Image (cartoon, rainbow, N blue to C red):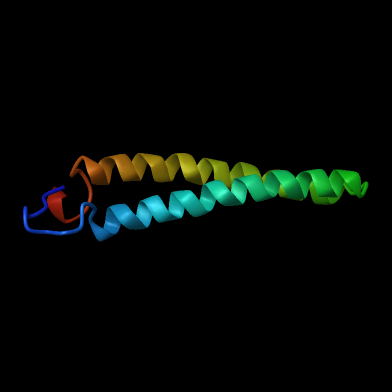
Length: 82
């Protein structure tokens, strides 16, 4: 990432976007954990199974997002990579 010394922002917009996406995704994973518990408490195995699938999908996306963020911060993706 190439930033100008006079740039008041320590992160590029792209890096900020990845960080924000990851934060939102991590918060969703916590919510899904609660949804799974609620579904189990209600005796709905089908709902719990659905929430687990959504959880697992988002967890995989979070791992991929982490990879992209690292690449952006290392200057391997985005404008600095050109």
